[in-house]
Amino acid sequence: MEPLGFARHDHSHCVTDAVAQVDSQCKIRGLKLTPVRRRALEILLEEHRALGAYDVLERLREDGFGSQPPVAYRALDFLTANGFAHKIERLNAFIACAHPGDTHTPAFLICRLCRAVAEAETHHEEGLLDRIAEATGFNIERAVLEAEGLCPNCQNGPDA
Image (cartoon, rainbow, N blue to C red):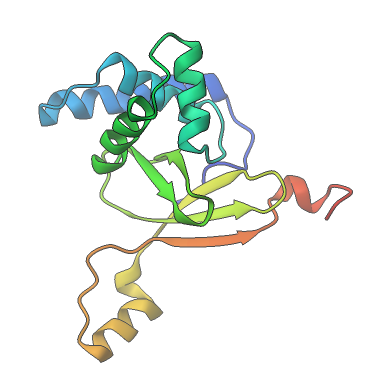
């Protein structure tokens, strides 16, 4: 699957489609996509770069959802716990999932200049990590790959 985040595309279409997918998944699973959770998801979808919790909180505050940190953290916790968003540990920030509702092992390609993030799928069970785990008797339950470098746009820029 092609990584999402660096390619040019109809961004408003991808936001609308992703929110519709998450809304559908919530209905199927009996989850509530409250207005603040929906707006937090939309905020994450509006850019293909990771946003910190306080960035999300500021946007929620501007939209009238409150200004206390628990507002953002609860919404982000819901989104990440249900696979609708991911936490990028390297940046201590969040990004909307490019494949909501799909069981997958994400790999994040993080641009060190513009902070754009592309999400791709990996299959740890077919790679080196799985072989290492198998050799040591370790059972992988969750794996996330984060790689830092330059996106195609920044590779061609003046600071590259």
